[in-house]
Length: 119
Image 1: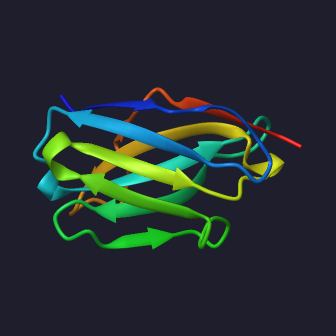
Image 2: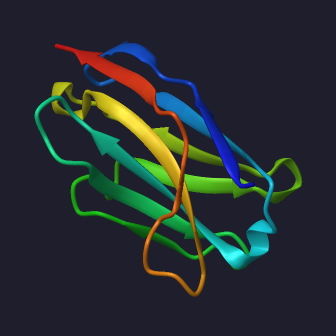
């Protein structure tokens, strides 16, 4: 059973930084993509970034490109999202998720971690 647990959320002032962590277990993650999403109140869930565990290939949405960086520590089965130059509109619950390389859908989700950016 694949499980992910996010941590690292909190309250930060605009312009500040946070690093989110996602500890994964229960899978052979070399066969997976890991992604980060967020959902703000009243809005749909938004894709932010993903990384292919085996190669380190990454992809970012335009909304976070240049400000957020996804990375992984394979020895720890942990994926990170470094978030810089945070804005109030980045306030949301942030989720990590996993999908098999052969799948287009993310099937495994963490419980989420709240990020609040004050102005």
